Image 1 (spheres, helix red, strand yellow):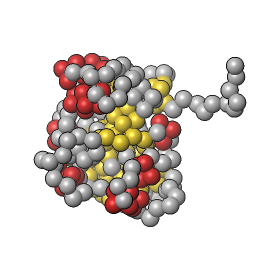
Image 2: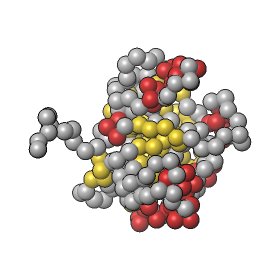
Image 3: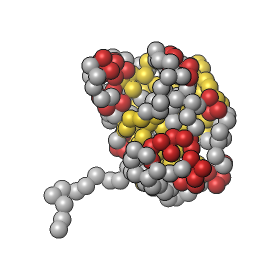
Image 4: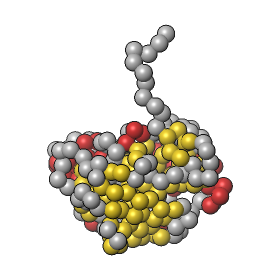
Length: 227
């Protein structure tokens, strides 16, 4: 048996200090996981259970170029710590969750906010606002065996040299172990899965020519230009 046409290449991220690539299976994103951002979006952080949406793996950007997408006039940045899994399973207990983590990266959850807003009002899924081409710029993965598992440390984003987002990983409402536990009760997690772990307050709109510089203490930096 042969394919009708050549299949696309496997989406992958580089690994810091290695010539190997990390093949990506799925991208899970947790919504509203920092209290101030939750309030910024008009919700009460004390009244929501965790929830997730997905981006397609081929939305990853590794060359530092984010093409301004179609059908929108309001594209927002959201800086995030990204978790890369080396193994998975179902119903993973919180106490065992971290053994499944391979490493960490810095990511941007780019969002067509106007289209997301329409979807919310109509009670429709968010994919049109969240899962579009090049919607997930991401840095190389840094193995946990080199940096450990960060639970505190600054996370920030500069836009054209001006600080626009700032927070600390300790401000997550649901920590990484909790996210893995919750996700594995809904899906079978697998090696190659990525988890975008939420963004602090300060999201805003980009325009063509903007230069974004994101940082997570202990993990590294991500630089992206809007083209």
